[in-house]
Image (cartoon, rainbow, N blue to C red; front, side, top):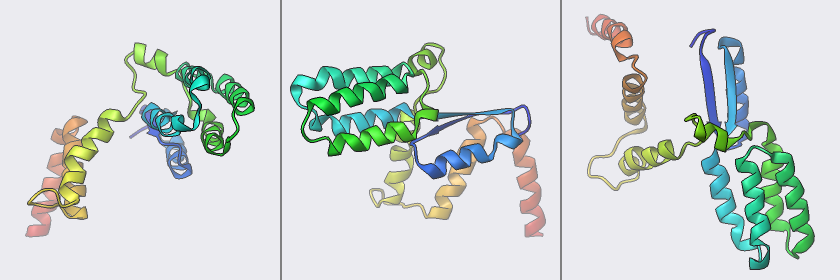
Length: 179
């Protein structure tokens, strides 16, 4: 990473993710912090059972507003919904989640149309397939935490096209250590 690097951080909204993303701002050109659409979608799916059927359209409208990057309008719609239903405790959690993460809500549709990253669903499914299966005992050969870290470092290097540049440095360290 250098002063010309543009970083896109997809996060689930946790405070530590936000602080880590912002901690690299002095070392790169800019950091775009995005509340991951995958996590927004999962939250909406998990809380949908708390919304009576007659108010599902308003609930969907809240999600639509977020999809188009309008967090303030989504929060206004939440206020309308809270006035229409009796049990608002569950929805209050979703409201607070959106309120706390307004800075990371972007126009997801525009990013999708522009072929820019807006969700980590591919990474999430890759983690589930490649890592969890190896570390949760579903395979005959399990990875240790250190082993998984090392394999992921190699895969990241290959995928970021930095392998050819980085491998000679690592190779030199290995041969020096072995000698």
